[in-house]
Length: 115
Image 1 (spheres, rainbow, N blue to C red):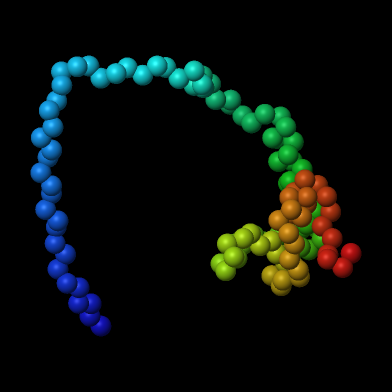
Image 2 (spheres, helix red, strand yellow):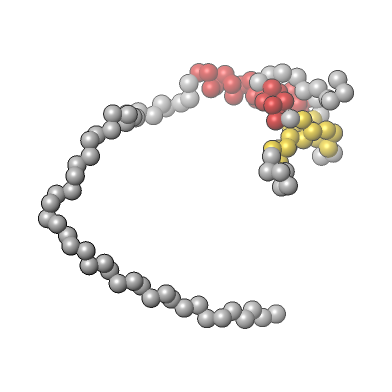
């Protein structure tokens, strides 16, 4: 196998413009009034984030106890998120909307489409 690629040449650089430069100072910009200053970064997430992580962790363990797991993929044709429910052997059981995955992560039970 060979790849015959023609030569790649450089484009000559354009000559620098010869514009007249004035000795006047550049205009100053007024300071932004909508600036935000962050003085500190918290050592740990706020309590409500810890609570949400705990709920999601419990949902994960509930799914494991039921012998199921959620798998997330991007559908290559549509570019949309696909959420699949699989059994412990990796067999696809059914798919759910992304909103259902969020509901499960917030503590709601996962039910099959027929229920």
